[in-house]
Image (cartoon, rainbow, N blue to C red):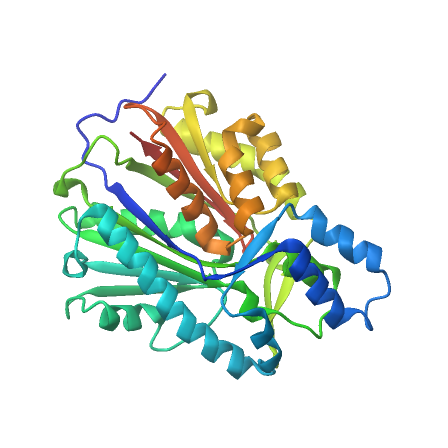
Length: 361
C-alpha cells in the first residue's frame, strides 16, 4: 500500500550548489606522485598501483597545487590551510545555491555546517556568516565527525528543524578537504586506499519549511531515519595523533553495509507504508566500488539505479559528506523525476551508522 502524503506541508529541497578547487589531476599523476614519496618505504609497487586503480577514480580536485603539500609538515600548517580554503570553497558553494534558489544571504535563518577534515573555532559557518553578510540573528549548528554520512544526515537535521519552524529557510554547508589530512608517514593499506579514493570539494543545500511554499521540481523531504550499528566504532574514522588525522578504515565495511542496510531500509519504508518497489530514484553516497556494490546487493537494485554515484566517484572521487550532495545535485539537474515519484538519499559513515532520507516530487 502506498502512503499518500498530499496535504502535508513538508520541508522542500530548493537547491544544491557545488564548488571544486581549480587544481585537478588525473589519477595516474597523483598515483605517481605518491609512489615517488613512498617508494623507499613500500616494497610492492605493483600492489600499490593495483590499489589505486581499484578505487574506480579517474581524477580528483585538490585544495592546493600538488607541489605545495610538501611544505605542510605539521598538523598546524595543514589545518591552517584547511581553514583558509574551507571558507573560500564554502562561500563559493553557498553563493551558487543561493543563486539557484533565487535567494539572498539574508533569507537564511539557520546554517548547518558539516565536516570531518579540519577543525576551527569559531567554526567555518561563522566565517561564512561574515563573508556573506548574513543576519546577526542567524542560528548556527556546526557538526563535526559524521564523515561520509554527514551530507544525508545534514539534510535530515535541517528538515527536522524546519518541521518546528516551517516558515524559515535553512542552509546546509559541507566542506571536505581530504587531501589536507594526507599522512605521508603512514604506509598502511587503509591509508594507501584513502590516498587514492578521497578528494576535495564543497556543497551547499538550501531547504525551506513547508509554509514557505513549494514548486514542482523541488523534492519534499518526507521523512528520515538514522541507523546506528552498535559496537562498530572501529570500522571507520580517525585516530587523532600528533600528526593530525590518521585514517581508520576496516576491510569489513562493505560486508557490514551488505548485511545491515536492507533491514534498515525496509523498516524505514514500512514506517511510511512503502516498500523498495515504490522507490524510483536512489541517491547514494559514493563510498567506493565495494561499498556501492554492497548497496546494490543489499537493496536489490540494478546498477543503473545508482549510475550517477558511480559516475561521480569516477570523475571527482569520494568527497566524504559532500559526495551525496554532489550526486543529488546531478540528479536535480537531470529533471528526470516526475510528480509523485519517491526517492531515497542514503549515506553511511563512522559510528558505524547510516542515514536515509525519503524524498517525494
